[in-house]
Image 1 (cartoon, rainbow, N blue to C red):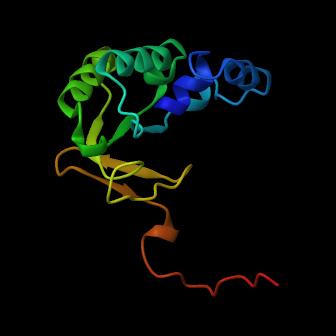
Image 2: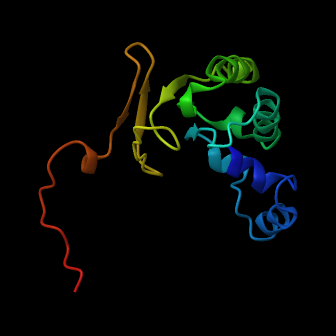
Length: 148
């Protein structure tokens, strides 16, 4: 969340938002359509008020309205977990976005790597995330390519 917020504001690094806009680093709202957004807070543990501002900024950009689901990383030491959950639930209520909370990726341990751009499915009945790309579903049938 912190990095996305920094790209959109001048709060932390004054030149970052200008550079991001000039080089179109932050995707336009239509590019978020149908995606699963994964967010998490940093080791800085932003206050609930700042977390709300971060989400509001994503909402202003059309991100929260466009995504098909949200995966939320476990906050370090689970600090503010209940506050963050309450805030995100309120901010996304009108979109009825499926949200999977407290996933171990990002800054909290144990860490899991989430691949960008992979086909994935969120299950809220039996909470979990499934990466549905063939590469992640079983043994690789072909030998690895040579690096030479």
